[in-house]
Length: 316
Image (tube, rainbow, N blue to C red; front, side, top):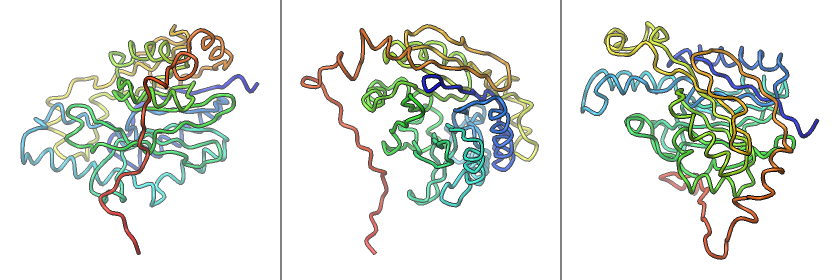
């Protein structure tokens, strides 16, 4: 059965901006995925502890607004520091259930001083080991008011049975050279994580699949006005301005021929299971392989800098 991989898409809502509550929900979801015999479990962008939806409803680009400063500080308190072991319990469950995981987190990175936030995609293998932490290269539009731009260190792929799996955050999936980097690393199962909207997932999922001749799995979260927590700073003001639905899902899967295996699922919360057959990758690479026989590295070639960036280089 090495050719087959059973995956689970976690189209669920976080316990928004609550680190402890969301970790507990992630652990419950891991157990449910394991009960369904999943081998790879995927969560949406920034799922732990949640996407910064408030910026669209608080005049986020205005200077010195107390609401934005105080919610940002709350976000910082609930961001993840991997080096402090805050993902250890999740890794333990991954090892216990022999389940690989892609998890979107908001990372407070000590190697950049510990006071900026990064939208990071973490890969945990089925031995419970964190094998890559990819910080989103370019936050999109109002995301730049709360997230910092990342670097290329996490542009990596991982072997999972016959598959070579890699992942990108949200609109990174529209960046041609970043996609080309993943193709060059041998990716044939592409994970695209999103905050949640079929508007985002419907076109690009099939496009990447057809361009790369890979499986493409888009995973989105859900978020409703009722999910805003009572302990959030200025929650009453947010409740007056936010729509009933902030993220409606749209998780989906396209095959290596660019056709739907699973069309976008809208508004439904829960785990979505699907088994992928690796042979379909080889079938579609027969006539097109973007990093192999249908490339011309003598004419065009990509340089990728995978160094982790920092403002200091300590020599003790």
